[in-house]
Amino acid sequence: MKRQQKRPPAQGNILMDKISGVYMNICGNKEVIFEGSRGIVEYNENSIKINTGKYIVAFSGRGLHIRCMNEFSLVIAGFITSIEYIM
Image 1 (spheres, rainbow, N blue to C red):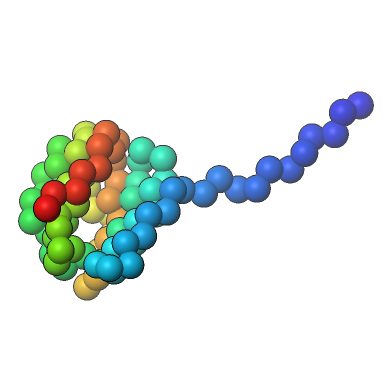
Image 2 (cartoon, helix red, strand yellow):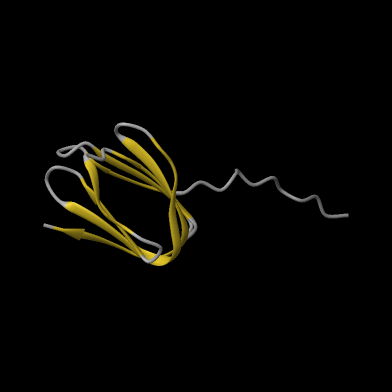
């Protein structure tokens, strides 16, 4: 009988920009944990744009919403199709 190997739990892709203090943990195409927000520029079900102070990070997709938010971080959920940095 063949034993199954245990796999480590799946983790998201982590992107950090030390210059602007932005940290993103991307969990597939369903959720992003975003730290380093300085405000929301645009928010609707197809687009969320976040100001970081140095640039804007734009999330596009379907059914996008902000699950939770505090002063500097937020969680974006929905079907994310693209992430774009706008200077």
